[in-house]
Length: 93
Image 1 (cartoon, helix red, strand yellow):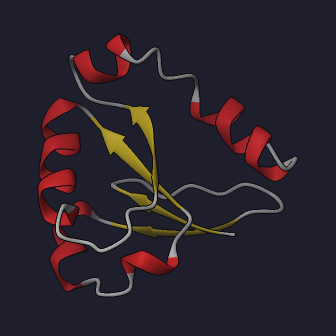
Image 2 (cartoon, helix red, strand yellow):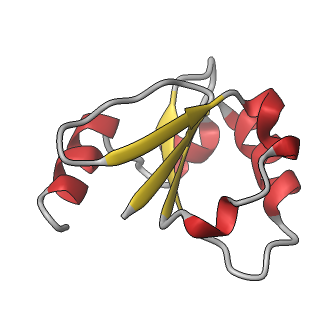
Image 3 (tube, helix red, strand yellow):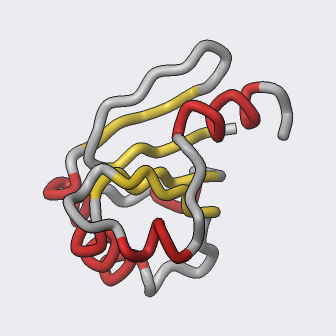
């Protein structure tokens, strides 16, 4: 399973995570090969990333890592801590 982290470099044993900056997303053409996309940031980052990806034929599963200043979207959806999510993915969850 391939994971793309946008906006922050993440590492976890047992997971194949590629990290890129949000600004380089328009030049990244193989998004559909990822099973999960981690969006690191706040509401503005989430909006910008989703606006760039809305035309994909098949969207990966998005994981929110709220590192912004307000994080309304993450609060509404009760986003768990990223370590907990990565642990679950590494254990097949």
